[in-house]
Image (cartoon, rainbow, N blue to C red):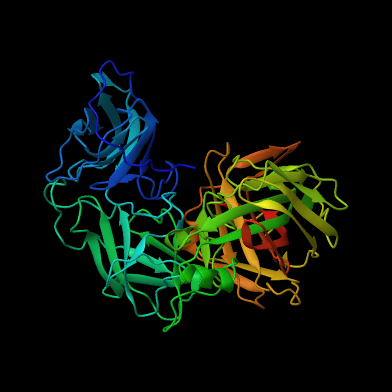
Length: 541
């Protein structure tokens, strides 16, 4: 994952620097990779350059206005159609630069270079567009909870500080479009373009839910969208996204509750931990799950393709009232979201529960290692036969303990495969239209009766891939995935499995089992559950 670096103190530039090398040029809010919708760099927006030897190991942040085109000896040049402009650096570090692309930069395919220590990098491609809005997130990952504040006091919306229908809130991002005048000074306060904001299943526009969409009067390049939370919206994880032209880039979430309450109630961490956070205390949570995936094409289960097989996962996280935004699990009922990660669990997972966990039961399982050593995020692939190896069986997951979480063991009896897609096998779906998904089956005896509708699309070499996740209301047997969510996926490529060449995309449905709860030293509350996903290979174009 890409993270922003902490701001460091200003020190003199070091002479004799190595030649700067550029790896990526991305919108600073969405981190949208080139080739995906809304991945261009908008005129007047804040963008990020990742690479090596881009600047000194320590520098400062440009704060005084007017901003300069050089910071700590670092300058940038963008050239489009023989016209060159000088982006305004806001922050520089050896591996990262944040800068504003001048509004006067022509649109089109161009090049970017970085100069530092009298050394200039090789030029890299940059696609300059009129608008491509990225939503900032407090995690700085470009997904998860969105950076949305209350209009009244500027406080951050979280699961313990919820919005309510009718409230006026502010979404922060960058990429609405160019301004008239200099990007180095306090920007003008005026609407820019005609963006559409998606909040839950509502679409807001200027004059209809959107109050203001333009630059912040606080700092150049920073956009704010003032909006009224629409009626009928509720949940800890309500999706929010903006299309300012060129499609939706990243999708965040906001927390919304009924009037008179300041916390939401549908997070997997449970109401007790939410109340604990709301009272000013820290809260630690363990999320253990077994997952089985069965994807078919033309009636065949392709072992090893689309991740077919069985998996075990676990995360151990501690949240504080100030970091409650990290408690991000899935999407609320009735909605969809997408991200380049496992949407079931986007928590920071920073508690060490030992080097590896064990799984015992009828399935002989390997150790489940901490794949981010010391940070409490565990995962293992168990088998690739494409069969449900742990269905209706008793399994125990245990740990001998680590620096933060001590020894524990929890046992659950896994559920049975139930919900299964109706149709949709091997079909091609446009990413510009809503998609209705239908299924039969489903187990209404489970406490978590909502059905999960999920999937993903990857290009040929899997350098681009986005997953989507929808939660259907309890009792539903169909769900419509909005076109604006599907539009965030890359066009599906092809992959080879044995002698078969199949589309590199899928769609599936499943239900999570009733969680088994547990506690352990270092964990206030934990759950173990399982899910069986059944679906088909699909093409999104």
